[in-house]
Length: 238
Image 1 (cartoon, rainbow, N blue to C red):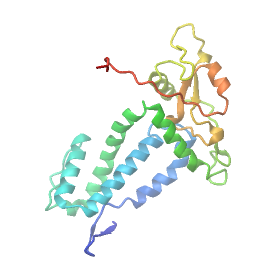
Image 2 (image 1 turned 30 degrees about the horizontal axis):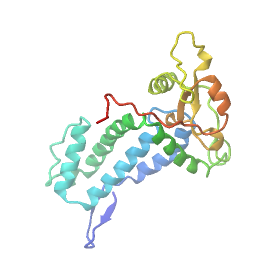
Image 3 (image 1 turned 90 degrees about the horizontal axis):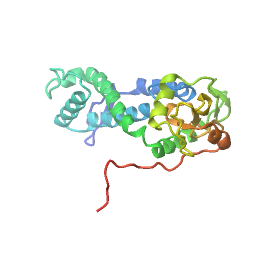
Image 4 (image 1 turned 45 degrees about the horizontal axis):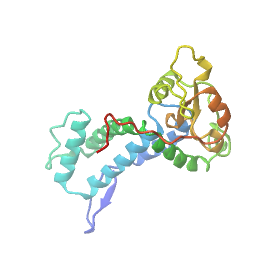
């Protein structure tokens, strides 16, 4: 367990994530190579959240830690253990670590539900990821075709195709053509990398959008994300 120094020179136990950080980094190549239900964005949200929690548990007061932990566990639908008190929780720091790490999954799911609908955000996220992808190549992992370029998938899982289709409301994200009609050929439904693989895009679910065949063919290896239209449920005028 890590010892986190306080301003007065004393140290108190913090929640150490060293082993988990290593596992996270080791799994990144798998995440950029093929679609996983726990996406890069899920993992990013979880580890940023957990890093904040790790700092808070090492630097803030006991009553704050208890309140924060209680709120997170309740939000995640996890039972609050009877040892989660100011008097006893230090005896169960590893147990609290495991519970909060698990609760971070729920927080990541809740945030992802909102962010996956924001294509502008997703494209910016993919560009940030792409900056890291450019630093690696075949010598680092088998998923690379050449430096900075991930190998193309031969198959997109049905759960991802269904999710992209419904998120994009069955419309081409370039020309807005309606692809829901029964007479639309199946081959006209194409799932495109928003940030192309040739410019360090990934096969993570956050990098896909629905296009018609004509738009996908003309797009080629150019990044393409049209400005997202925001529809309101009622007239927002005066």
